[in-house]
Image (cartoon, rainbow, N blue to C red; front, side):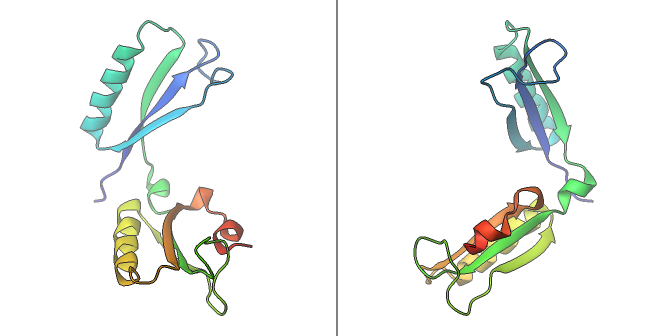
Length: 137
């Protein structure tokens, strides 16, 4: 069984319906934590913000669907600006993985390419992955 990550999310809301973050504020996301660590962090942050009735934090666990949407992306770039792939080199995409497996693959591939200053790899979440940006297009 895969261990699910937990996150403490929230912040200062516009009103006590707790549906929209207050103007000029951004939603906070702390973690990942295991379940106990998330509860401990939640207890600490709610204790520090107890005097503000518009502050609210909850604990959210990754769903099974969220677990397997991580990719390792990169390759050899044309220069140290890392904006274009090297001539004849494709953008490499490995995955999908759960986050831990993506990190393990990233460590392995960056270990093999450590001597190449133009090789760069990142771990990307599927929902935030922009292949044009990553390939310099």
